[in-house]
Image (cartoon, rainbow, N blue to C red; front, top):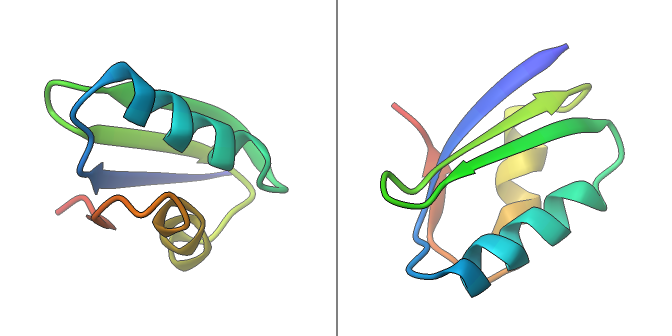
Length: 67
């Protein structure tokens, strides 16, 4: 299982919902944790960091790997 941490530009619960929806549709994702104040998204599952970034980018939100 891989754990991918992302920084995603989210400003409200609507943003959180959009990010959560696209990630839960992604094959291999087992869990999604989102912390709005820190704009951190933690994804666990059989996924690659590149694929997760690409999937979240579909929401139009600025997305990068957490450093």
